[in-house]
Each structure stands twice: as structure tokens, then as C-alpha cells.
Image (cartoon, rainbow, N blue to C red; front, side):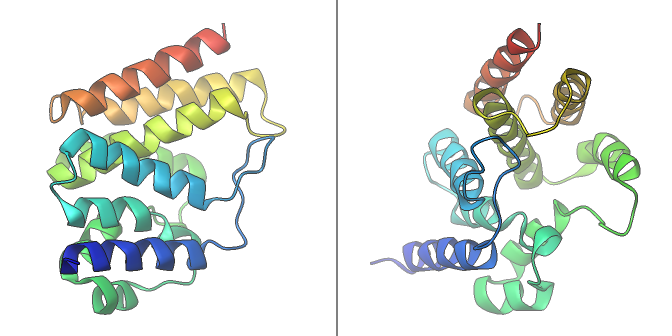
Length: 180
């Protein structure tokens, strides 16, 4: 077994344990780990699995934002590249939600190639989830706002990977269609 495969399975295990009590916001309340594995799968399929750092980033991308995981812990377990990638896509939760959303639109263009690919996969997964299991209590207007915002974030990521661009476009079109 290659060391990359060992690290990847350790990242999957770590992500699942860190998010063990978390559920998706949708009506189905799926385990949160489903989102993380979908993001990693989108990245693996789009890149032919060629970048294990990116795949680990997909699995771990919400750990700093949504769990008690620390940068130092990620760096020790998975290396500096993985920790830096996760930090690069992590929102500052001390800021108001509207500010975090605005900053994602403004700052994504300046992020690394890996971070941009991860952003596309993350937003694709979120849009798919909204279609299949809309967040409980979200109004149609809030759902529409999310669809528009996701496209604004992804706009500066386009052109790096045709497969991810297509996956996002399909998910975006389905979400727009669902919302009329």
C-alpha cells in the first residue's frame, strides 16, 4: 500500500471522527461526512486521483471551520501542504456571515489552483444537496440567494478543470430549475 493511500484513508477517518455528531442542514439530515466524501470524490474524478494533497484537502476542508481541529494538528498528521490548503479555504468564523460570504467572492480569485478546485467541488456538492434535500426552514428566496452566491464564488475558479466546471454547471442548472 502506498504512503499516499495510507494518508488519504487517515484523512477520511480523521474527518469522519471530527464531524461525527454533525448533520447536513437538509431535510434528510445526512451525516456531514457525506458532504466531505462527495467533495473528495468530485476532486478525484476530475483529476484522475493524481493529487492526494488536494483529495485530503477535500476531506478535511471544513475541519478548521467547523470542529475543534487545529492547524497544528492537521500539519502534524497530514503535512504542511494539506494544512495550508485547508487553512486557505477556511472562513474566519469571527466575522459576520454576510462578511464571510462577501470575502469568498472577493478573495477566491487570488487563491491557489488547489483551493479554487476545492471551492468548485464544495459548491457543487452544496448545490446538489440543496436540490436533493433542501435545508429545513430555508425560504425560496434564501435558496435562490445561495445559488446566485455560489455562482459568484465559482466564477473566478473556472477554466482550471473542465470536468469540475461541467459538474458545477449541471448542479447549478438543476438548482436554478428547482427554484423556478
